[in-house]
Length: 519
Image 1 (cartoon, rainbow, N blue to C red):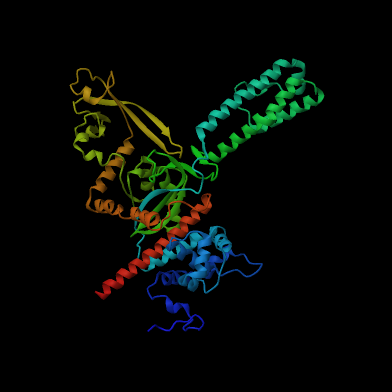
Image 2: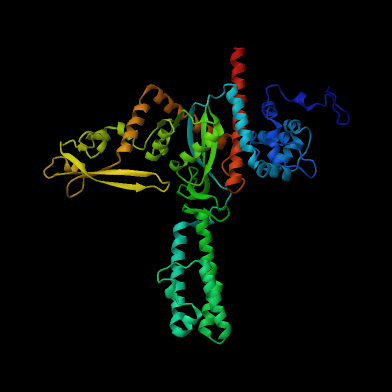
């Protein structure tokens, strides 16, 4: 009536591999990691002490865990004890969660990128990627930090400025209360500092110590005692705190107290729909055939300034510059166009007004300089009304990165009586335009490439390249918030995610190939 069932009898076979299907993802992970040279892991294991778990075993377990949406080290350790694919990859060994977490975030910090590059080379050798077309895009992922422990750069500067005023006022009061002879003798004349000079915490510490020495000689001086107490208990600690905040901020406008390397950014995942800023990191990836070629982490909310450092890392990983970079309008700055041109990279990169230029409203707008005529030889512009705008002067702007933008100013001799003036400008006088000729040149090049057959095909393909990868990572893999804190550990998390994604993509492509052969 029933199939015989007993839990007390030993069953064969005992080899776990018999329970792993031939096309299982665990086998793809196993094959990829086995191909790695053991010497890659030497940097992570200097030797000494008791024997360690084999790094290849731990690498297999970690990558497979990320493919299965398991990111917690405790959950990974649980899977190694209970799940057959995990048990097979681990060879029935049972590393605990501490070992797994230490391996993921400490042991592999100088090795993971090498492993990623080696696996990427395997994919290139087997023609999964050609490393020619480089589709780049970014997404913001929330940091493992409290959303309300924010520090704003402007607020720090404001509070520090007010504190400086209080310090100056305090010492001016002390100075007025003492005799000039004592001030010269003590060497504490504030005029030496300059009336408007900013006092550092180190200088304030020295001045406080000098006042404490004075207080030892005059212990009954209540105003002096009160001033020393205020400096030691209030002003000096606050100034030290503000200086530490400014050091952590660097060139950013905010950071989180629970993860000081995270910056507050506007996320797409805004469930309250109130534009709330959240602590996070800007994750940039380059893809081809939906394989991740390079990943990098940035503290800047916008993509524009992330392109150069990202491509520098891509050159290190790939060993060469990409032939063609395809990106959206978020990267279409003059600085980025110049950077790509200087390195001989073809730029299939949109600029901010690319799609607007195709609209009837844009083409009918007589105030847009893109609808005017430029005479290269005479260096002047002719507006739709036929008026000439001649060169007036040149201005320069040096960006934070050091890139210099040269803007030329052109001015009309007379706009009086022009029938198009109301549609052209709101200025009371003659029309003046400020334009970077370099930027216009780059835009013309980009427009020509994007409207070509190849450029248009690449721009359309971009929508299914990095966008699809981010969809896989965030939605299918469920990775919307980092588990670890700090740039170094967050970069490692994205590295493990990228490895897992590439092997998942390889397994999916292999399955398609087998299906095509069977048909």
